[in-house]
Amino acid sequence: MTESAPPILSAVELYKHFGGLVAVDHVSLEVRAGEVVGLLGDNGAGKSTLIKMIAGVYEPDGGRLLLNGRDASFSSPQEARDAGIETIYQDLALCENLDAGANIFLGREPVRPMLVVLRAVDRQRMLVESRRILDQLDIRIPGLARPIRQMSGGQRQAVAIARAVYWNAQLMIMDEPTAALGVPEQRKVLALVRTLRERGVGVIIISHNLQDVLDVADRVVVMRRGRAVGERQVADTNTSELLALMIGAERFEAA
Image (cartoon, rainbow, N blue to C red):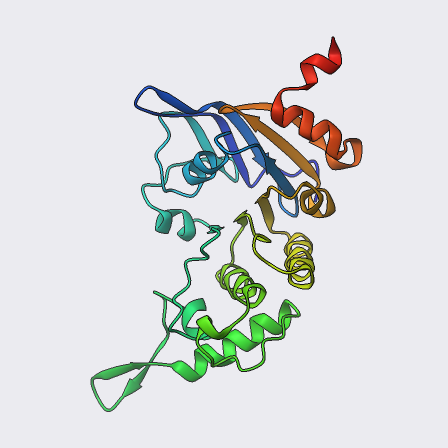
């Protein structure tokens, strides 16, 4: 990460309400190339709404989004993906009856000529390209042609990450990437986050596991009741301080 480089993403004073409920209240956030930013907060803090505005699921009611210094506006998740923003939610959005290659190329399948006027999906190319990108990420998945439903949680996460990397994501948003995984698979997913950093991808990671965030993030932003209430460099903070920010106990400590 280069501090002088312009941010990949700048969210400026983003605001979103649902009826009388203010879900995100003028929150600003920056992410640079090769930087991992942890987004922390208790349930209902506004984290999911914030990332959904960045990912094109929700349209902000106020504020600005800038991508590489230019104003950006997404009316759908596909527009955000086309601009280089990939989001991996807890459910991963994978088709469980399809194999890894079909999931990596889902909606963007390569075709090959067949007979004179017909075209067919090039399944061999999808398999070869899938192996290539997984090898680049040092991911080993035996039986790559198996349906996704037969793979472990960590392997599914790896396929979702490989899909984003293959399509040249500039920014990866990861919502609870280690939830429901065993310890070895958690470590593998966190290793993949570090690999993304090394490749110059910006990452926003949401997790209730503070230690996971402290292990991989460069910087953390804490939200509470829709507002950003604190920002810290990981090297300058600890679990106790972050928990205090999340629950609002820092005002008592300061008294």
